[in-house]
Image 1 (cartoon, rainbow, N blue to C red):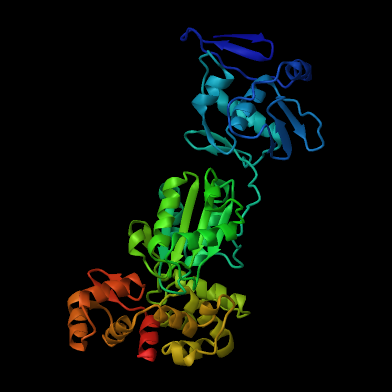
Image 2 (image 1 turned 45 degrees about the horizontal axis):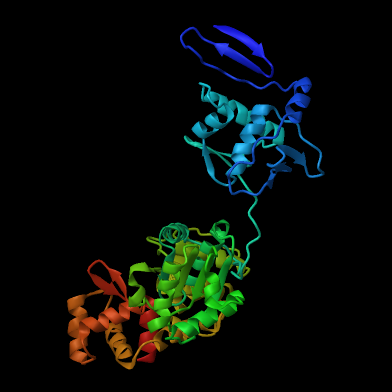
Length: 470
């Protein structure tokens, strides 16, 4: 093996290879002036801005210069500069090790380990001690992190973190990126809007033209023009709905249960006609015109044998926020589990139950939660009117039913526990509430029934609300 120093590199030749080159940059000051005075690397074809933040520094791709915030140049070796330029051209995107080899050592056979050596040196030069600026994509390459731009739009930030919905959040993000249209359905109070806002915030970097919430709760629209008008007002579009063309943005149509007809068709058509547009819808009702894109948000998983669960975790967080210092133990865990089960794991109910516990205590709240519509009507929380109490939430949901559907729900609420389609059909037929199977389908579409295997079950809050109004 022979070593030869040439300029700013060491070329290592091994007899087993015709031309194996290991290049290691020198940091000698005598090399820096020659390197920095050389012609800057090409700005390349990447879509990243010509000047961007790199940790605590700024990098000007057009000039090939790394500078401090004050503008003072930061010396880099030729290879390190070429490496940074290649990463900066694709800022925020993965650049494979093979791509970096081809860019930094064009036409040479170079040990891939050289990329890691140069990355380490570059990280040291920019003070990236924890690898948070130049990110390692394990087994594939590297990515230059870019500061998250300030989110444009009007999506509200949640005051409390999303609790117990990590899997659902990941699925919503995945579906939105894949299909660009998603409708989150579910019972009033299950947290559809909160989940949708969390997904929008997680996707902030995907939409350069912002993310926009269009409130539709209580708005009855059957025409495309009416929905288009609501969208343009929320976004402040001067050119009408046509101004969406060419924009990369996300629309959150929040509370779309009263949309119908051409208004629903417009949602699908907007996604089809605008490649940069993604639409996320929340609705108590699973609209059949949008059935392929509907996903059901179930209540939080309930505890078994007083063990921890997403529902109990939310209860503890809400209780602590209400000023009640509590931790699960042999004495408190059974009461907390009982409250969560009686309130069906519905986040709204669990939060109100936690607030009640801060006033009444755990034992009294556990007993009151057995009949939540009568025993907890005085408990309120902040938020939209339909979500300030259990009675308001269930009243809103039941108000979306026709008279025949309310009668059918009252009949089903008298059945103990879960029931099969045959059992439900028999009970509905005896009560003469209309066509049993179509009635079941409509109640499911309106989030009044949950599927369990081949049968159905009523959430405890739905059962309590149906019995109260029946």
